Length: 264
Image (cartoon, rainbow, N blue to C red):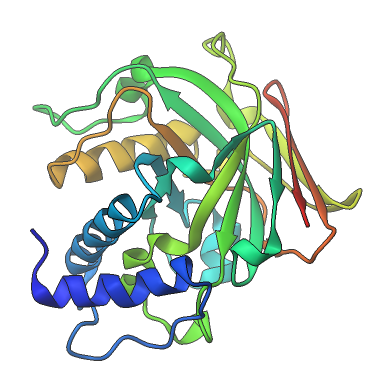
């Protein structure tokens, strides 16, 4: 059960998402002081979403796993956030601007798990997480700037609020991925037909499964191991782009396919 401090923080942060009201800074007495406290607040936040009909979790997103995003946000380590099932779309997402405060898009490689990743005797690495991956897909992550000025928010608070997470659009799930070198896959994102960035699988911590291993170890250490069926977004290979009404976003990852989001 969440402490009173963590519950109060989660209730304030959830208002930004549930009521589309940009959040101000959390009061000092409830602001998470470190990463451990941040993830405890995040747990309380997920309980609020579940109770309000906005859950359950479909999986997780990982932010700041690529140089372009670490540079953009000024954070040099991975940050995890929850992915709510009702916000996950397949192939095409028709998205209403009114559902967000200030939506943005990112270009990602995603995996769907076909096995649990419990805590073991040894930490996971990119080789030992691979057998748990049932499918891989190109994905658009939908992010939302739910803050009066996110640059004034500390990293623990951003993590507590699912690290900007607001959903995703998954491309086709490819199950026969085993012969692909994921580090060599190239990807690109376009808005209204104009390219806004490119990247590769190697940008994600050297190999996309390195990010998955990080999350598997992080989640297992917290007593919340990754489970069969979860979708994991591994990090954006293109800098976040903020969108406007009418924008059409397309992403392509070599060998994995495409996904599209339309904002109305």
